[in-house]
Length: 548
Image (tube, rainbow, N blue to C red):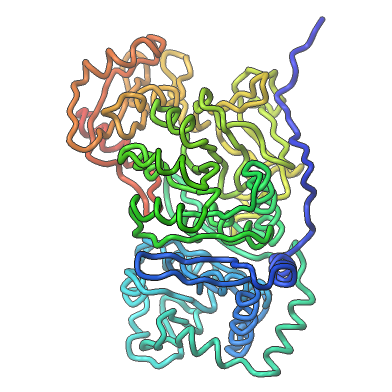
């Protein structure tokens, strides 16, 4: 009797792991390519060009300043700033001094910032100009009448605030001053600390927003950060078949920021960082003028390139391919984008890093195939590996997986088992071609008359309609079937459509019991500061609209 293959894959690799820390990566690139540009920070007004040699020199200066301020190995330092050169130097200076970088999301309000600062026990905060200054003063009004010493009631562990402005503000010390205050003794201490840095040392903390409550704090090591970025950097070079010039719009504070902050340093290629306010016209000119070969763009920019007729210009440029991260949207527009722009999609989680890569335009409903050094398996409710083609929970194991959730052993144990498998909570199936198809979240299953319905299956059909911008399908109470299907929809700006028209559109693609009983229209969905839809609030609003 023949047995179906198991839903298990190990993505072997011709790219070995490096065994390096972030410090090793920068030291090696600064030695091998001292005069090569490492970063170009570009706005419409100016371009700041940084070589690997200059980057390392500035990192050592800043590291000496951090030691001079009395910061000790293992202490946590928050960085709350938009993409800029100082973000990069701060990140690597923390690595050299064995400090732990806490990446704070731009847009956090007072509640989220205070929660994160106290959860991670930050000893110092590096802050850039922007609305975060207002938020900080609301949480720490004591800073407004201090010089550069911290004594903040709501943030008891905070001892120092470093401001990225050239001049220090009340209650802070300027970044420029920290760059100057390190002395020979401080430099000697940095050298000693650098010699003890190991790739398994804790290096950073970043947040991952759940659909409810305050964000969890993910702890990662040098290994988690570097090895994944190194593998992807190697993949960029293999696909481009040329020297890589990488441009990214992703925020450094996000998990995908490692593709910008680490991959180029590890591989020794140039990274172009556009201003966060860049428009399509500027990005096209930047790609052409800087000879960009690989661009990492949000989906909105991919769509803008198509919408504003810029594809021909891109096709005639140096651009070899486009990477997009974080979305799984199987629309006809994205299939068109892949055919024209050579689009690759990367998907993963904050806890695991990017797990899959997909460049098949006919399979955008799938996440793609596992990336190098990943093991994946699909299991049933009893933990047994299911046959290929069978839906179950996706689990992953790799060198890139987080160490833990900070100060939350129970949550850590709930997602990482004793064998090191991370349980994603995603319901997937592994197909014969090795691609992973996402069906939905484990907890999002709608059970209608004893039948399981995965919301993503309905959403993936609805977003194909050209007038539909976003769709989130939820379950709502039903007297007969216990639960019914309710599709919550946001339309493109200025568009109108009736419920009947949408139902006619989706009917050919969905089984009868998947058909939404209700379709509700929203201007926007309730979301947290990172943009993730808050499902409980959406469910409550939907019930209110339905009079339940």
